[in-house]
Each structure stands twice: as structure tokens, then as C-alpha cells.
Image 1: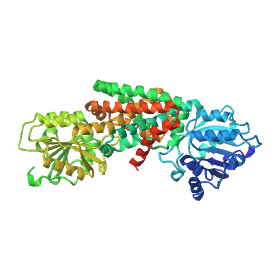
Image 2: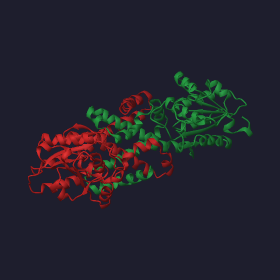
Image 3: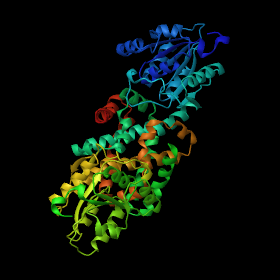
Length: 289
Length: 289
């Protein structure tokens, strides 16, 4: 990739992992880059991607590493770490491909990126969007539109690399938020991994009762509060395992709030109770109008 | 109300409380009863209801009690209890109006109904639907369609009264689920009041951090998990205070599940973690297809 042509329009882009997120990203990048190649561990997902022209060409990781200008790693976190390990063991070349990942936790990934051979141009990313229904058959070119897309530049990330990553974010219709990896993980634990854990605990509580009438009574409130519990298991266990410290800290903070609410309910006092409910009520009402 | 005419079509129906639930019920009952009268503590809500023909006529509670064949109490729980107290102090008459409430907790209401003068024909109800945006301006004739509507007959509830309440449920397009009041409250604590508490604790946890970037990162998962935290404060504090024991028991069960999840995350073991996540994932995936 030569300097005057260092723009997305001139890039041969490889999407590694054609699930909901990678598939949607590929769809959204159509027409914004020179070529779109891709791969997936599942032959069915790959066949689907080719058949529906999500990508122009199927490839292997070795060939991607040897020929792409921009490699986007879009698998669960521990699989991204395995791909980075493969790149670490590849030999130096004159090519300087940009490596962008869209994994849900960033500290472990950015640390692994820091150790890549010097020709690779890494930057971390995390788009704040998704669906609880995974798989390329649910891919949607509009998934990223108007969403926040976190970028985590490394100490070694060049201005050119950052600029290309920003161009990707704009091309899919998202908005850049720059954060360092540790800060990202603390925030993501609170705003994303904790809600998932909370939703799963709620499902487990009701399942544990073993009463069918409970499911008959489940309405839109229960449906929405538990939606995240249906998220992809491989993705979520990788997230919880690679962001363990931040998730445990978020859980501890959450349990403190749960105790505050429990005490207010126990008090039986309407004024006390209202005082712990109303801040959350006002903020949530203004947040998503 | 005379016997051969004991059907909804012949009833003068009064809806007491014209918020989201009462307003939607009135809209859904249009054309299914002889007359629809109503009242609300808020002059604005009442004016809206008359202007948009949600009801045919505005009334006072005294006049409702003296003239309606079916009185539907659709206010927050503690206000329903206050109306029942007013009826308890009214004098006996030849009229035998049916009293149906749609309050969110049932034990306290059904106990108060049991003490009504013998001419009143009480039955408890609770439709399992709602929105986080209260108020008659959000009322919707379709709100009850295909939803579960719990009926809690009392020992003194006559077959005629039960039949009329069932007719109301069918008229608004909902499905009857009969439960006794205590069972209803235990189930509602788990499937409705616990999710609200969980959502509120989650909002409080993030607010407590005081970082604006957190709100920028909040996506659809956080939005849905916290939706119930925006629920009406008067309604929710009445619910938590009148269903205190069941809610505290549900919270204790929930905290046990949260600890199970915390321990699995702490273990750092993928197999252990997956084993506590997957039951909830499967059940939630099949529950709302």
C-alpha cells in the first residue's frame, strides 16, 4: 500500500470472521473499498457470504495476511488473539497491512497487537452495536449506522493508520470515540458486560422456580430486560474471561446498588424508596427519547 | 343491573384512573358496552379523555359508585386501596355493581375487596402489559391484545361476576389466567417487579460512575436492559411497598444467581462459565421467537 493511495477506496480489505458483526461490516463497506475478501471457520457461513455477495472472494488467513491492505478481525476475542499470534509468527515483509479488530474487549488484544512484527500497523476497535441473534444470515448493512465505534490507538499506531480506521468508521455510518484500551474495558464492563450478566442472572432466577405460569405472565418488560441473555455464548464467555477484573468490579458496584434498593424496599417507607428510584427514572427517561 | 341483561353490552362501565392502562382499557372497550364514563385526579388527563372521546362522560367517584354497573379501578395500587375504603364506607343499596381492579399487586387489594359491603361484587385483575411511557396520551386500544390478563376471584366472587370479568378480558383481546392473589404476587414479583428493580440498580450503577463517555457507549443492549427503570414512579413505589415480602424474596433468589455467575467469572474457567450461561441462553432464545 503506497502513500498517495492510502485511502479505503484503494484497499483490498479482508474481513476475518463472517458472523453478524463481520458480515454486517462487509455489507456496509461495499462500494467503499477496492476489494472485499473474507473467511470464516464455518463452511456454511462462508458459502452464504459468497452466495449473497457479502464478499467478492473467499480466502485463507495465510493469503489474507500476504495480500490484504486492511485486515479486519471480527471473531470472538480469544480467536482474535489466536490470529494475532499467527501474525506474530509470520516473517517480516515490505508490506505494511493495517490490522483493525472489532473485538468486544480491548486490553488483551491491544497488548497482543503491541507485540506484532513492526511491518504490521495495528489499531483496536469496538463498535457499540449488535443484535442478540448472531450469524451472517442476520447481517445488516445498517447495523453500524449512527452507532458509537470506539477506536483504541496503540503507542505504535501511526497517524495514517488512525486515519484509515476513522475512514472505515465513517464509511459504515458510525461515530468515532477514541479511548485507551483499559478505559474502554472498564466502560464496556459497566455498559455492556454487566447488563448481559444481569439479564442472565434474571433468566436463571425465573428458570429456577420451575413454574410454567411464570412464562405466561412474562410480558414486554421481562422480554426486554432479559434480551441480552440470548447473546452468542462463545462471544460472551470470551468477553467475560478476557475482561474479568473490570466485570467483577462492575458486578461489585452493581451489588452495592442492589443492596441500597433492597434496604429501601425493606424500610417500607415511600419517601426513602422514591429517593432511590427517581434519579434512575429521570436519567433513563431523558437518555433514550 | 338485572340478571337477563348481565352482559358487558348492557353495562354502564366506569373507568377510575385514566392513565396509560385505564385509558387503553377504555379505548379497547369502546363499542363493547352501553356507556363509558370515567374520572381522573388530573384535570388535564380528564380533559384529554373527553376531547379524544376515550370516555363518553366525566364523572365523580360518588356518582360512579351510585350509577355504574361495572367499576374498573385503574390507578396505582395504594390509590385503588383508598377507593375501596370509600366504597366500604358507602351505605348498602339494591344495586350490585361489579368491582374489577387492574392494579399490579393483588394480595392487599383482594383483602380489602373481601371487606366490601355485600352488595358490591368484587374480583381482582392484572393485565400483563404496559409501556414505560405512562399517561393517557400514550393510550392504545391494542395494548391488551394477545396479552395475559390475570384474574383473581375471591371466595365471595359469584360465577356471574367472574363471567363478566372474563368478558372484559376477551373484549380487549387478552387471554385469561386465573390465579389466587398470593400466587399472583409471588409470580409478579419474579417476572415484573424484580426486572424493574434490576433495571433501576443497573441505571444507578452507571450514573454513580459519573463519566459522560459511558452514555456515548450505551447501545441497544443497555437501552433494553434498563427500559423498565423509566416506569412511572408512583405506580412502581406502590407496587414495591404493597408486594414487599414477595419482592424481597425474589431479590434474595436473584442475588444467589448473581453470586453463582460472579463465582463462575472469577474461576476464569471457560467450561464452568459456559455451564452457568447456557441454560439461560437456550431458554431466552426459545421464549420470544
